Image (tube, rainbow over all chains, first blue to last red; front, side, top):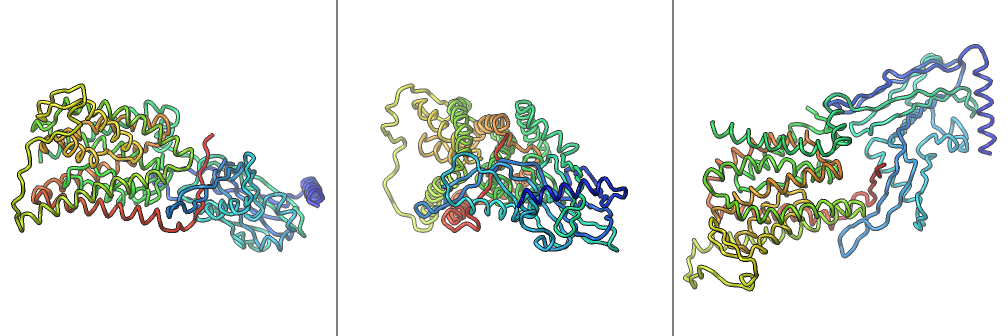
Length: 245
Length: 306
């Protein structure tokens, strides 16, 4: 079934791109999110125009990570980490906005195939883990990331203006990881993708923040010595200043 | 005003950080401690990842110890020889501590171990300090005539080899003893993200028998080097030292410490120790509470490197 949907979607894409008018044009207000010293999170506007009727789904996905999930259990009255599971392919950020509820837009097989919606996200377990309740660990990732505002699902957040123009906003919280992101924009009609577009997005640290981070990661010995030197100097300076007053 | 911390990778209110540094600085000025045991849990509480909290606080303590030791140095209250022996132990211990920290982080048990060591040492030291100060205060109200304490007491400790004369501390003891104390406190300093003053000072007074006048200066003297060592090793091995975070805490801390020093001069020694004991026991109770209470979410995520 999934394969058939994929073939249909691909066919739809080929058909529409060969026709003269582009059914979907989209762009992002800013392709680069800069983390500077005053960064408290950022909103990015995604907008565009569509030809004909249809539903819009926009997915913004961050770089894949390897994530270790640990579960605390009671040991002699105290809570400590006991069980753990490791997953690959866990997006650092995943936000989805759509014009209607996802299950009204497309069949579940389609959503699963393109990993559209939090329920459709797949993570790859690493190692021969004997953990039988994998689903609860999977759920824990979704729950934790939602709490940190890194996973978001916003139904109805894509607004269509006059049936032609659409716009939606994505929020990137202050703790957003750096890396390359991509935004996938789908125009879906009768459960099939009529047109799709992909736009890149980069989250980077800039200025002073970037320099500190760069030194810490690439020149850790110099960074360590600098940290000590700064501390020695400020400690001495503070004592000298307050001694005079 | 928010400030983005590049290594902690989070945004925090700069006035909150300055205030935290200030309050802890004030207490450190009053009590003559570096206050790492207070500020590390506070940072973790506001969402700083534990490894970054530990690495950055240790960096901040380098500065506060330098600033504190200078006054003691001028008054000649630093036993350099004793400090150096403690330091040899401290450098070895803190190196082991940083390594242990990395191993426990890998096993996912670092938070648990930090909590348990906090409870253990804060509980014992806070409890003993509280009893001692309470006893002193009660004695002053209702004096009892007791046996006079001997000037020197002799334990098995005094039979250890490698005896060295520490002139300033007026001691003739085995070098193994301060070496061992330095080692143990060094491991704890690296693990707990503290300078170790609140463990070192009682150990110097009760285990080594050093005169109280040189205890604080000598402890600060060796803390500078131990925390510098931990800063360097954490920066090289784990990249968990946030210079910006350390700097902000430091500015608040230095100002707080100056106010605290003036305030502390007006309080009596036993009252000071009693108050400090209550603070230490308070932090201890909070850690116990967190350890025993059901967590909001028993599942936690860690992003693996690479």
